[in-house]
Length: 380
Image 1 (cartoon, one colour):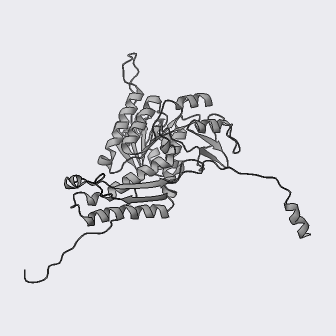
Image 2 (image 1 turned 90 degrees about the horizontal axis):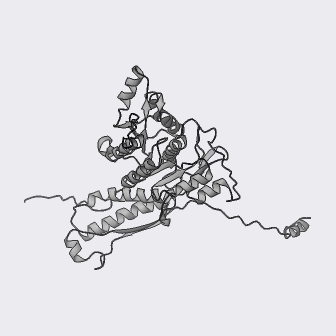
Image 3 (image 1 turned 60 degrees about the vertical axis):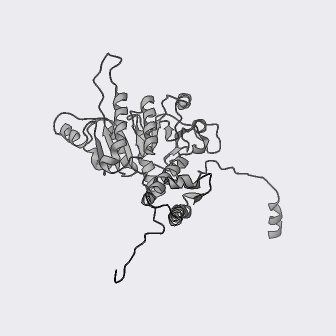
């Protein structure tokens, strides 16, 4: 070559884009009288198909007059206007055959459709619920789908009183699930769950995934389906008993608000809702943020760029108050990244982090003393 050749080496850190966890996945039923209303419903929400809703309040007009879809959208819209993937399911015709399909089967089948939402609609539902349909089998199915999607499921704790709600809690173990008792409406069994989904999306957008659902006033609630005794100064209450059983409840204090931070996790490290969602956000962001590194030649420059790309994002999250601390490193020792593994194209990257735990319990030490009388005499 007679001249100048310009090379453009692509090295250095890459930005990691924030992961959106505020996308709802809603399973619901809907019916409408024959005529234009039924046609509008079937056009907007065909049975067994995924539908992307970008305006929850506008979608209510097309959601029919029966079923759970309309009330769920209204409860969600009271809190915020999130993106939502809706799957409408239909209850099978009544049958005396004990083996015949049930509404539970239809709901669980609808849940499976959430797994393909990202491919078909371009969004991944991360806040999952089936308000009013979440019987124990459906709630278990929600937890399983939430695990696959790295999402979080909100389900009701079924019971007519505190004792039954606490006993029901023993049926679950998933860290991606929160149980809620009681309900916020006598007319719609899924009202509290729908409001939890909407409020979760609102908190994600306004504060972040590191803040739990608890102690945030919600809109549109006028009462509870059951009385819940609550005292901020004591755990010997209905609310305290439910929280001790890892069940989120509702209280009335300057408005109605959820009260409880706990998941159903059988692993204590993931007892808090915020810890689970922090882990999910980091998994998403860091994996997606390193897509550029796949199939690049393994060199010192690549190792340095991977480390610094992750550390740059961790520093951002720490500065934003979403993490307490975190660090990434690549150990090139024989035990972690032996030459044989590197030669085979395998590179192990380590990082740690400390999530923000909620200030769930404050202890105030109140002491009585007479020493301030001395100040009174000096002032005189």
